[in-house]
Amino acid sequence: MASITLAELAEKLGAELHGDGDVIIRSISGMDKASEGQITFLSSSKYRKHLAQCQASAVMVKEADLAYCNGNVLVIKDPYLGYALTAQLLDSTPRCATDIAPSAYVSTTATLGEGVSIGHNAVIEDGVELGDHVQIGAGCFVGKNTKLGANTRLWANVSVYHNVQLGESCLVQSSTVIGSDGFGYANDNGQWVKIPQVGRVVIGDRVEIGACTTIDRGALDDTVIADGVIIDNLCQIAHNVEIGENTAIAGATVIAGSTRIGKHCIIGGACVINGHIEITDGVTITGMGMVMRPITEPGMYSSGIPLQANRDWRKTTARVMKIEDLHKRLKAVEKQLEDSK
Image (cartoon, rainbow, N blue to C red; front, side, top):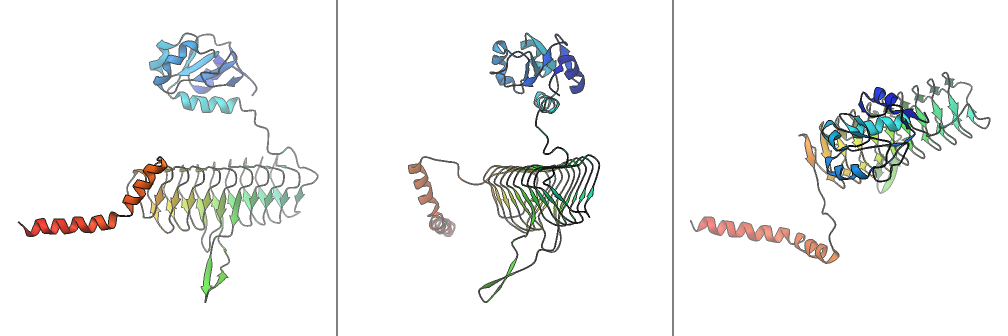
């Protein structure tokens, strides 16, 4: 949709319109840069002071902020959510592919639903099932007996190995690899013996996966990602990991094998999560968190040392290295005090 009237937008968002409903909205912008034909939003009252100078054709605000607005306004419970939904309505992102390119290879044993699009030089192997309106970008590889649900989209150069299952309305960004071998080896007198990884990757509906992320197939059982999960760029999901519904994982996070993460968790960027542990539902781990043990209670967890000036960091590190000695000295003092009573 290239444009929409403010009245139409209000109806679609379930917002309360104040002002001229015939105003045409063509795009969204930040409050400080918005101009005629654009809509912006105020999600925090601390930015109210900018409303007077805002040049947008309309602004989305909460009820409490309406009195501070002069022009056209949409009153909505959550302006940030309103921004997201408006962005979807005005989205101009092109399709991953249009029709089936002559240079694409599609096995004669593959099954394609209605309206499937496959880009140039993509490979669709034997036994693949593509649901209705699936889009496969240029240079993608979809391995044997893999299933992609309706309306799922793969951007260019995504590799999906054999026997993988993606649900409906998933989105996978470029250069991601799904179903590669997990890191499984046995040691025979110093020589590594590869363990074939015979499990699958099973991904639910409405899952979004960022660019250059890798999701390993299971060793014996499956790697499982539930409905509504969102995974950022450059993440590593090892074999037999299970991730619960609507969990969000930010970029560069590494999750070791056989870990189970609950529903509605939020994992910050560059976290490292140990293998063979369980994280319960409703956990938030702040950026660069190192999770070495199970988390059994919902809540927010953090670790790591924030950035310091180098001279301060050196002092902190030197003191940390002395913690064991300080602990022993403290225990000795406590014992002396106890004996003197």
